[in-house]
Amino acid sequence: MLTEIADIYVRLSSEDRDKKNITDESESIQNQKTMLIKYCIERGWQINDIYCDEDYSGADSKRPAWNQVLKDCEEGKCTIVVCKTQSRFSRDMEMIEKYIHGKFLEWGTRFVGVVDNVDTNVKGNKKARQINGLINEWYLEDLSDNIKSTLNVKRKNGEFVGSFAPYGYLVDPENKNHLVIDEVTAPVVRRIFDMYIRGSGYIAIAKALNEDKIPPPCVRKKQLGSKYYNGNYEKNHSPTTFWTDSAVYAILRRYTYTGALVQGRQEVVNYKTKKRRNKPQDQWDIIEDMHEPIISKETFFKVQSIRMQRGKGQKIPSGSCYSLAKKVFCGECGNTMWKMSYELRDGRYNYLCCRTRKTAKEHCNNEHSIRLDELEQIVLDEINKLLDDYYDEKAIGKIKAPKKDNNVQKSMVAEIKELEDKIKRNDARMAQMYTDKLDGIITVDEFTCFREKYKRETTEFENRINILTAQLNESGGNKTAQDTKYVLDKYRHIDKLTFEIANEFISKIYIGKIEENGSRNIKIEWKI
Ligand SMILES: [Zn+2]
Figure 1 (cartoon, rainbow, N blue to C red):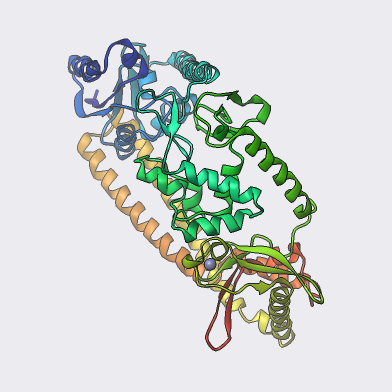
Figure 2: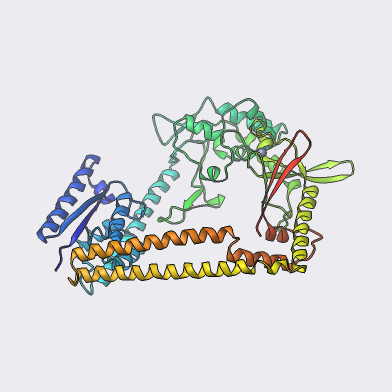
């Protein structure tokens, strides 16, 4: 029997934390380590490394040390993973199945939970391990329910439980469950309500605030030292440094400003993914008169009734959207182009203009809007030109010409397939080798030697696949070429641009600013 090479994995869990005070944390980690090292030495196992995650929940597969253990297993640096219990490794049934009952077998890694007697080398232990896993998962769910109900009680008591105060307020330095007025931003809130009542719209208000260089909520949060990070903003490359119409809208809808504490507007759908969803308004926790109001209730309800009235006229009939909806972007700042309509002498026209320009004009120099019907005509002409070219080339037989390329492509695809098969075969051989090594059929030296060979080969195959894939993509790819042909063959000439058609041909359109010579750069990103 060969010597096992062990990775010891320790994790501090919430049970440890609840027990005593914080200073005991490291002690608990130390206890786990001592116990596991002793266990390995008693069995004559060699210790490869000791890994430790200090502050991560069992469900979180992003734990850094945990991932290091998996990497060791995959690379064959260890043959056994030792934990205090299976739940220290993971409380997530999916992870148990994926690794302990899946990948570990493939990698030839044995798993041992010392206290709960888990050992993947013992046959018939699997059922017990699965049951263990389920119990652990229930525990986690239970824990998440406990946290939820604690927060619920606090909310129902009118205690503020958020991580940062709403714009206009600060968390009371003497009581973190209470809000006090932020003298810097409260006047801005009052001004927003006031402007709206006097007839200004969201855009006009945002513009006025930007002109006066008033920091918007995100900036204020940063000033106050909050770690708050708005993922959506980052993703859409939208500006965060100035007021937008939606920021104004959000403030006008906040009942909190009347002195009421409004919480529980969202709930966590799944304790594993931490995904949230909005709750219906009648399920929110609203407790009146919990802090000093910034505006009166009369003002708030007045604004809401104006909002309803103004909103009515602008409603877009549901289900209908214009042909280029969600496809047009500003070529200067990258923000979306907004659709608006103006009344002219000869009728009403739709225009598109840069959203940044509308709310914070110094952040984008794309000052002119573009008429929607004119843009649609330009796009339609481009599509028809594309179709004309395609059918011209087809008529003189040019479309068949790329067939030679097609053969080259075909052989490239075949080579990739072959390489992928070779990699799979190598993986299978590696897996077999682990077993052979465990059974003593091959020595450690032989094992290391073969493993290096297979690894080298696999890397070579992967590199070749990367080169081939890049070449395939450059030559238009195999699938895309067919898709393009399919779309083009469907039409001969298009008279009217619809959303469906635009969607088949176009992914994005960028509208640049009007240059000094009067030209305007309109860049179409084709799907085909
Ligand atoms: Zn712009």
